[in-house]
Image: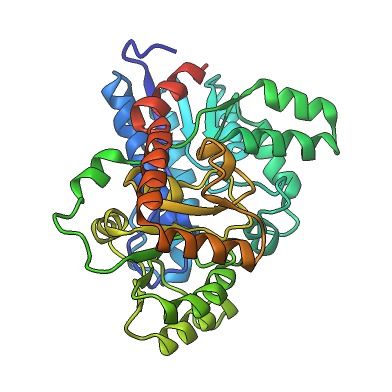
Length: 378
């Protein structure tokens, strides 16, 4: 699809900067940074990009804001579709704004407008504990949302293969049809914002950053168990960028590590974007223990800053690193501890690995990803 003044009704995710809200990464992380990069990139290529005017939910209790915003968003989308005829409806997250609902609105209005949208995780990926734990029984709703779109945008080949394999167990025909309408386009890192936050000075001691969501599927307790053995042997700092809920096992483990090493363990408690990106630029190592990773936008952001990333050898990590075996480790504490100690002891190797990963991350700049999105538009 070429721009030619074509219009896109862009249905964003709910986002927030309030640390009081217990939200997923699409609300406080990539939903802000990647979505902003996509919108800007599409507008820069000549598309007319607009969004429904959703009323503010800031006055509501934190636990009600996301759901209330979503419900109000359907009403605002209906008002927009009554008044205008966009060429494309773009859904940034198919499990936040359901394409089935948008398709229903279009059918009721008698409008034939294609729907394009991302899936960021799925019930049809068994490793996606967030979906299975917090949204049980919605597997078919998740599938219906994928089927309701004319073009499904996927963040990785891993995600494409996973969806096809698991949906095929239900219906090979549905799986094949979905794959024909899907395109792997990646997700952009917001390079302009990251570049603007580059600090002028490096820290005095090595820094390790854990910048993943505080959920079980990211397995922070594995990282904490390993760091409990390493911290006493090295003059390093460890930064947890996200806030942890102290009522969970993950939260209690982070708090215990901070109590044991109060001068070395820094609790970011949901850093501002500028402070977050400054920390990535300053970091020597980023570590992921995620057992579920359909892309790894937090890791890609660290890779872009030249940080050496130590990653579990599963999911999309081999794909986004170019199968860099030096930074990938096998499951378990032993492999992770060995890699962390190796890179702490060998700064030159650490720097070289960081530069290799930075080159891989350049495949996910807005220019690259937005170009792939435009090529996929019907």
